[in-house]
Image 1 (tube, one colour):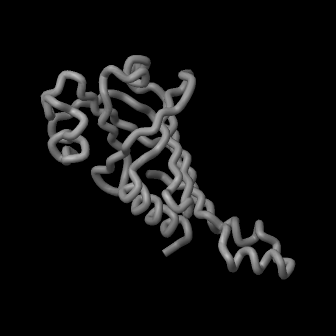
Image 2: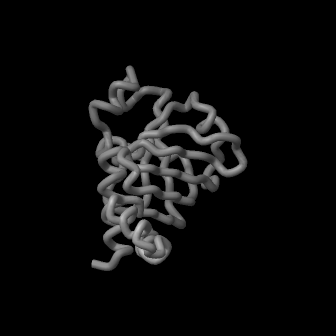
Length: 158
């Protein structure tokens, strides 16, 4: 497996495990923490939210946006660019619905405030943390840290 494939595999595993990322809209101040769900190990990404959030109120169909992710242990970081739209596809809602999502919506899947966002990734860059005890020892022994780090970055098509 190439380093890029390995980094991408680690990204999907971390995103499924941690789920929280910062979502922002192009041209709108500030990013908001959101829970990201995946249908498979590929784009699009899905986000349940409320129609009352500033993000949804300011959203126009297909608006450019960004998603920034850091795994809980900081072993992985990702910056994803793409397009965001509200897509209340009932089949997707049914497939992704779970007790954690249900806890936020008193009306369940029929809650009038429920909004499902679809994030279509167009570009992604993922960094695997190059900091480790071994990396520190190599630096102390005079090794160039940039050499090891070059294999810890992947530009991937999600």
